[in-house]
Image (cartoon, rainbow, N blue to C red; front, side):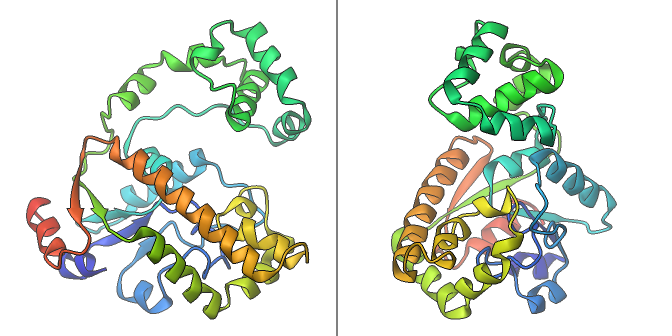
Amino acid sequence: MAIAERVGAEILSVDSMQVYRGMDIGTAKPTPEERERVRHHMIDIAEPEEPFTVARFRRIARAAIEGTDARVVLIVGGSGLHFRSVVDPMVFRPYDPEVRAAVERDPIDALIEELKAADPEAHRYVDFSNPRRVRRAVEALRVGGVTPSALAVTEERRRFLEYRPELPFVGFGVDVGDIEQRVVARLAEMRCAGFLAEVERLAARLGPTASQAVGYRQLLPVVRGEIDADTGFEEAARATLRLVKRQRTFFRRDPRLEWLDGDDESAVETVIRKARL
């Protein structure tokens, strides 16, 4: 916000769950007042019932960047995959909701055998110990006949692995200490702000993507009466910490990012100077 207001920039959120209307407290959306001060993109553009794929996210985000008159767009957040979907070349597996539903019902061992039969080299590109990746690979196979080996040798995949962007950018990561304490404190603030009531209000409307959002997923059992609220928020804290670690690892691999001390009061000035804003 400080940078955007200084240089007249707009903000594009790459948080995968801020796209959903009504999921406000749990996704830590910018306030209405902040969005009035600085124009934001990729927030409140879908209903929580809708599945929202990375491919769809990329398409809408790219259109927002191309359509703005702002001199600078700050891509902020969030999900490392969604960030890379905006700036980097990416090949998406074909998608069909009916096929996905069928794949979700099938036993994982049978799906692995299906992959092996179609692509003997699939194990080189798909982690068979990760059920979600196995299911997505089988889905692509059933919908479009696309094998993991075929996806792995595309030019777009090679450029993706080499961190060669389609949209030039200057990137910064913000490093902060006391992550565990910060997570616990923020969840306490969210609880006081009515996070549980928000989950209860949305519970019946959370679709296949939204229901997996960290925090919401852990509080849904509270709404259903399966666990108490304290346990739900403890689970949410643990899940948030796991997510933080995964995302930090993801971004740390990106050689294009320069890391700054988030507690350094001059960080804003550093970004403005180094990005030549």
